[in-house]
Length: 131
Image (cartoon, rainbow, N blue to C red; front, side, top):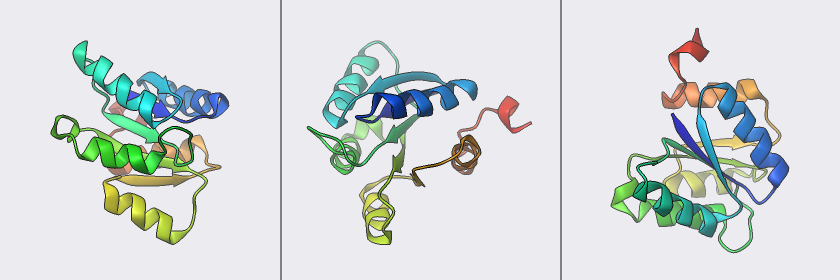
């Protein structure tokens, strides 16, 4: 399994990335939505397309919602699962992200168990982790 962690906070990228690595993911990182789109293009060129993108909402250059719209506009990324991982907790924001094409929504702060539960819901938890 492959994941792209998109967050302008290096510490948060490290936290999410470490949890995903512990679950068996090959993880790459991006500091904003624009860098993430570039990483998707570079990855596709080398045969590395993520199964999952964990996306912060509030970032400079291109925010998480703009990233979701951009990814959903590209048919080459239809198979990529998008999960918002953000402090935005208002119902309206959650609805907006899901309507834009995000598959799941995890509110910060969260636990590794909460992330594992979301991955299990999405069918993206490797079997050895569920056992």
